[in-house]
Image 1 (cartoon, rainbow, N blue to C red):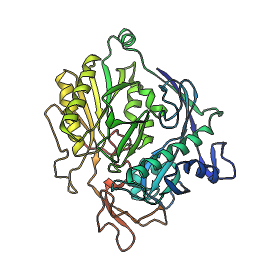
Image 2: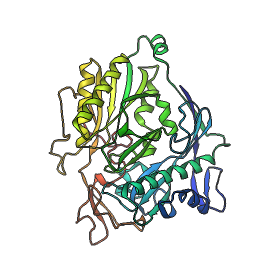
Image 3: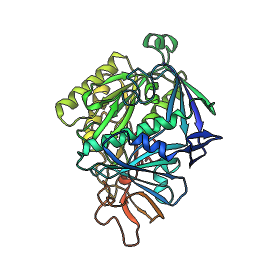
Image 4: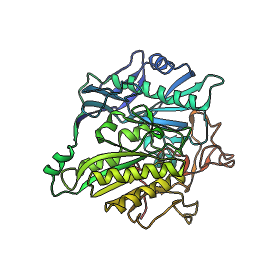
Length: 426
């Protein structure tokens, strides 16, 4: 597949009477985006705000972060199976609004939401302190079930992101990048001396409220399958899960997956980027065995030389990660795994819940148990009502001076397991 990605850089976001993009400034009509968000009857109210880098602003509880995009040429549309029809995407031409994001927030339904600080020490740990954020805070109707509310908020975010993306349809991109992969036979012929490498992405799918959607289908209902890496750039994979904020993959990360982009940078130079393989993370042992068996089988059938495997979450998914690693290695395929660590506040605990000698090439996104103090900020978008309940917080989190004592777990994207940040270790 061949995809032209046109990047349009947003320099500022302002509220206005008419939604448009002009001279790099995104103007947003509050009434228009509110109407888009409230199309779902499960959402009672929604408010919009803007958070800019460097401002004394805290956003919480954060659910998802989305980069607006629009499909301008080719088959299908953005967020297929959710916003657009279920057409295979990943080819043609797509525009992305860079430097900004739509952030969904709202009442907590579990304990796995997050914090984005736009300034201070917390801002150093989240990539989304550097984006201009259009934040939508949703409140559910009374009596709604938790999973229905969660899905409604996430899908409202996709609708708003698609609405914003549509404003760029007739613009001229600031830059254009081309991403292209070969068919299997073509790739062998074209790059006979380059190692055949694929990316195995594990998608969070551990039961209720742990949802990742692939073309609109919950990943827990799927078997491992092959994608062209360009499909995710059109929003074929989106987030709907409530895992710990530090290592969940918001939709923004799926759209801009750094493993995919780094492999494309080396494609045709040092390696042949064959494809992306997606697999799920399950609760029951039989499901883990099935998915890891299928993943290893696909790697063997594709005659791969090397594989990069990333996981999402920690603890239980560590078992899926190690199963994938050792089974792929057993097929004679070199494997590198990307994870993060839960090594205790002192860094002395076992980093992963599972291990194997085959997992001898590991990249880490940092220790999620590391403690940081987040100072009181001038403005909160959302609410602090649940700040002691977020994973990585405690009853002692909110201190008398208004500051927060937390683990990195609470910060959205702090230890992301695709490497979409800057923490690591040697």
